[in-house]
Image 1 (cartoon, protein in one colour):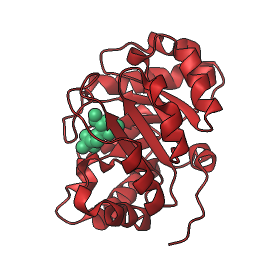
Image 2 (cartoon, rainbow, N blue to C red; image 1 turned 45 degrees about the vertical axis):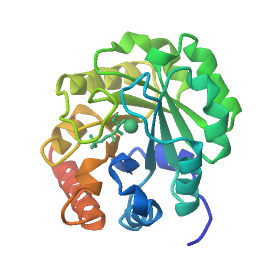
Image 3 (cartoon, rainbow, N blue to C red; image 1 turned 45 degrees about the horizontal axis):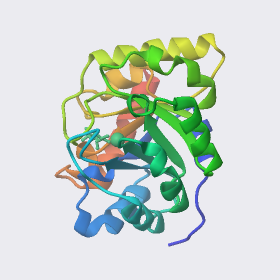
Length: 241
Ligand code: DX5
Ligand code: ZN
């Protein structure tokens, strides 16, 4: 495998396409490298890494060590989603092992502006996210600072949950807010993206889709599943808005 890393900036700038970021949370961790490579070969745009601490969310997942192993398995940019309290304590560690985009929750950052600058200073692209019950106003003042905005479409903590439809209306409102301010920041969504929700998500304005269970738990295998989602996205694009 070649080691030339793809540029996260280029992937984020490619706003003409809906991009897919497979979430390794639903991968088989005994075959993690192999599954990440399968996702890359099938046309994934990013690799989404879910970091959970058992405090901010009920689950505990992975740390910088595993992120570093993912980094060695792929050329794709990694978007690292920090579902942890006091994320400022770990930003440098994740940037050091090769996180390209670091996403923090507004709910965990009393000094959000400062934390986003810290991500930038660590050499990663800053991104922010909010839980389904958190209003857009929580991030309104930092929109100009971020390179991606993640709208959670489930309560974070577990893969394979059902999408909360109300969260999609937030995507549409955010899209309007960004347009008003002349900002072209990609909107990512995370949670419950599958065949039943894909079209609504794209129509609502999502630019990047995190997908866990829909890819890694697909009986037809990651590659076939990812390719069929790509084809479905092409069809959605062809429909009149
Ligand atoms: C949820 C995580 C997600 C999760 C999404 O807390 O942040 O990234 O893996 O999984 P699916 O696509 O299965 O809902
Ligand atoms: Zn996530």
